[in-house]
Length: 239
Image (cartoon, rainbow, N blue to C red; front, side, top):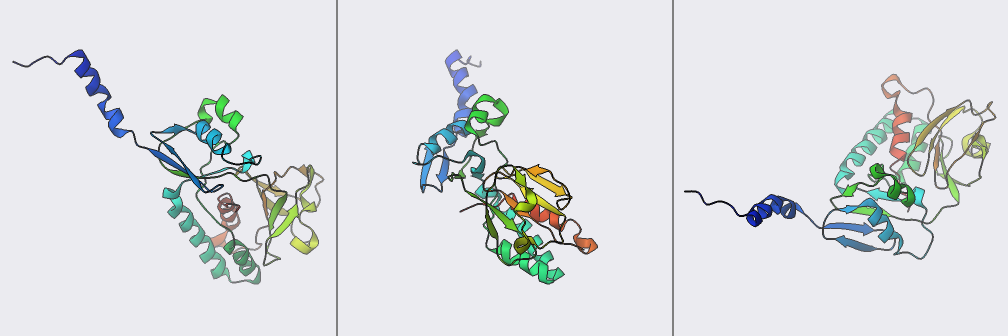
């Protein structure tokens, strides 16, 4: 005859898988170089709050990077495909783009809301982090990084609020024969802007964003290359 399971034993059995699966989570901070440790999965809001208490400067929330080391191989693969394409094109312009991309640091940045107020007040913005991450919490930069086929080095241009995009793309940086560019905002949003030379429209570029002027006359097999480079730049980590 089977013995009935007591109520307490039943409860214990029901919750045993939950406790068995609970794993500690570590959040490695790049600034400062310390690790936050949690006994189990933790909300993003808690991590952001705890991390900002570890530094003595105002954190630039748009530029916070939540980095997933377990997905780094995806970024490395994407980067290799782009670099191979640029080297196969083998033009003066593509070689200059390679040189500028080579000095940048690319990581897998999770696409998450990082403004603490918005994370706390909107449930979907506050996911449960259930494995280890790396977190970058820089102060607000004062520049825009510009990448064009006309240079072999990135140009750092002072950030100017409410201005024309072409004010960042001066002739010595971008020449004068371009008409479009990609804006990669600090929070990873991407915009493709056309008609730069003749439009009088202002564009707001967040501090720390990037502007990328693509290659012209790409071979058909590489027709998406400029778009692919812009997407890779969303994974750039400012050091």
